[in-house]
Every structure is written in C-alpha cells, then in structure tokens.
Length: 172
Image 1 (cartoon, rainbow, N blue to C red):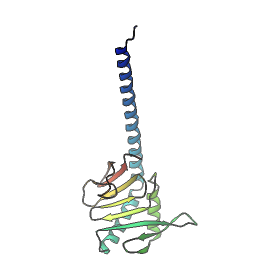
Image 2: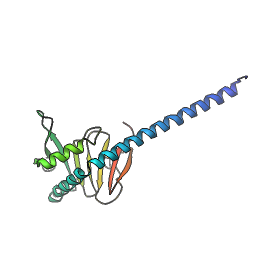
Image 3: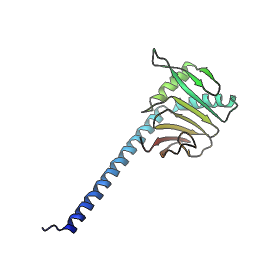
Image 4: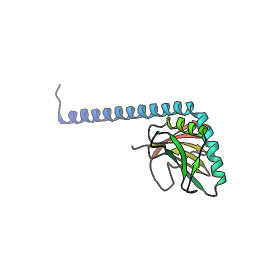
C-alpha cells in the first residue's frame, strides 16, 4: 500500500480522534465511579446527615443572620472532633457525643477535607477546602453555586435524592 501525504494526514487525524474519544470515555467512567461511591457513602451515612441537618437548622433559626458557618475543631492530641466554632457568633459551640459521632461518620464520606458546615436560607453545605461537598437544599432547588455566588468555579452536580446533592469541582 502506498501512503501519500493525504493518506498520512487522514490516518493521523483518525488516530487523534480515536485517542480523544478514548480519553473522554475514561474520564466519564472515572466520574461515574466517583459519583457511585459517593451515593453509597451518602446512603451509609444518611441518618447522620439528617441528624446534623436538624442540629444545624436549630442553630441557624436561633441566630439572626442570613448565613451561619461552623468550623469543625479537632483535638491536636487525639485527632478527634471536639467542638465547633462559629465565626458569626464568635464562640465555640459545645456539642454532644451524638453530634460528634455523626460528624465523624459523615467525615468518612469525604475523599478530601471536611471541616466546614455552612447554613443559609436555601441550603446546608457540608465541605471544606477540598473539591467536593454534600448539599441539602432547603428550598428544594438544585444548587446553583459551589461555595458562594461570587466564586465562578465550574462544578458537576449529582442528585442523591430527597433534595440532597453531591457537588464536585470539574478541575482539581
């Protein structure tokens, strides 16, 4: 078979297209397996998420603000969750062993950092400085932003059911 310049270009283009197609398929499989593992992790810890939602909704309703954020405080000696800190309230919040246990269980659902819980009128966000978060929609709407409106970070969203969502950044 004689390969002229035109045929060589056609072969190279078809190889490049094939490579792009294969890479896109592997990326889809990776995202699907990540989302499937998050669905499983969420389902395992669903009762803990629900218990925490109730706790944080009570904290939010007693505060006079549009948004309330809590930072999870971990003991340097034991590495275990001890309490929460609220920047808005400027105080540490003592929490029961039951809430500590739920926070610890939920932490296992994360591949990255889980250190912040944020509550607003429309949602309760569980996340951190990582690339993923679990969000409960209080207004039954799909979340429109990752951490805040002013941060234009492209993200994927997956419905976990019953107004729960798993969000993860597209670029890590």
